[in-house]
Image 1: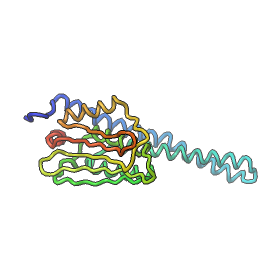
Image 2 (image 1 turned 90 degrees about the vertical axis):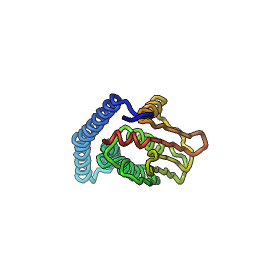
Image 3 (image 1 turned 45 degrees about the horizontal axis):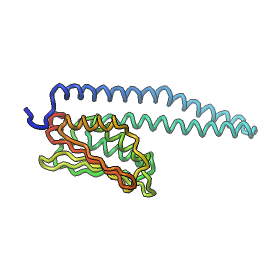
Length: 227
């Protein structure tokens, strides 16, 4: 039985069930987007391309059709970008691997550097685990990527844990953010959830200063979650 900073068993059961529900819901939405909207857009793109080839002597028609083709391509990129985000909720191979993959996706999609590093002595943070913690981090990272206001555009993400010390997740930017549109309610949820695990969230994001967030989770919290 865990003493100070331990979780309540009932709360953990509810959180774990919510985790599973979120993943199933995200995968279901991703599948529908791919099978319905994605395939419809692919068919539309094919038909537009065919119409352009069949009417290449009609310059006005061809110009309008090419504009529609560009818009269709843009729509397809947005849809498949959403699918990537939804599928990244699946952290079957652990929080460390999931964060590393997320940083790669953000670097590619947002044309910036999202650098991921990990210093973990034990395998505990890398066991199959907590989707809510990942969900909070994912939302924060996408918000940062959209609002970072520097030409260098660098985000550093680090997860570390040694011996029996807490798991520490740190996110920093090389410049100030134009805004960070997570609501007070969302920050409050993240803070309360970490408190259930015996941890805490510390954020420094004042105007004209680099953004810095530290999330600390006691090792006991990870042991309890992954047992």
